[in-house]
Image (cartoon, rainbow, N blue to C red; front, side, top):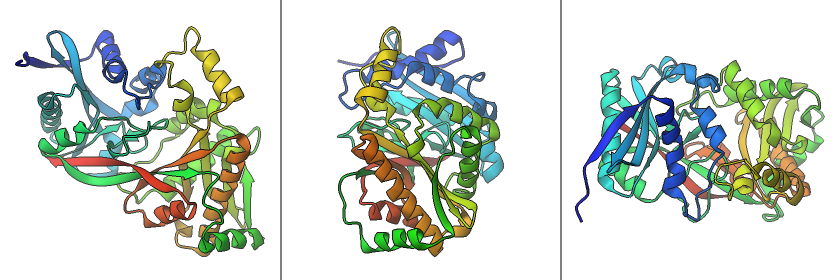
Length: 382
């Protein structure tokens, strides 16, 4: 049967933005690997009043319709922090979801390209929501397991849609999975680095200081902005974004999952583990009312979540490829894994890691973590 006419509309009203947010919940409902995020968090993510990063974007939101029903969505946007940092006339796209009809995806991508061309952009990169500091990349391998929190979900056919539309690989990002009860004894190199950290009086591994949460977050994000400053697509976290993120994620923070490494009294590295919220809200359809709150708190505090994620870790650039620096990172990993086992976690995802970040990949491998998902950033010359 022939498809009826497809129309794509740029949207701006509150009702349309709400429909834009809601669409993936309807599209993926019933998919065994789909993990509905919290709807209120998704709403805040695109809110100019709730998300301070929105001040840095010019955004065009689009919905695709067929017979009056929504069958796809996309956002095209300028990230002015990226443009200032990289000066590369690159615009971005994200929030790409659509029916399993290739022409729908192609039309959405062409619409995003046209908008970016109109803004004098010469290159389009994505998908991302909103930057490499948020959810980013298209899942191209690892569809047999659900995503952990703050990692993208997608169907296998999306890769063909993007590539048929002329987008090509910019870079891949790996998610590593560690079985916290496996991989022992550690490789000799790891054991050697941990022993070096244990024997060196200059090296101190300490947990988050109680009562100093915001101060500690600002400290580790300062390390983050230094550690990752030369990575592909990097843009720094602003003070406002750091404060916003810290408040949002605080309910998931536990002392034993937040460690800082010091050398001669200087904080040079950190590691940050959180429980996988997706594991606790998988059956709530993104809703906390009327009974979702009780289920979420019970799962987080009583029955426990077995999957964890390390979304943030870093080592100051001055200690990259430095023996003491590597010893600190090895000790941080082993310390947080041991703490996680005591908290009842069985698995931990380390994500994401750029495919060209050989040192971080080596650290994951020495921790007996294995790559199990690949996310791809695409690009196209406009």
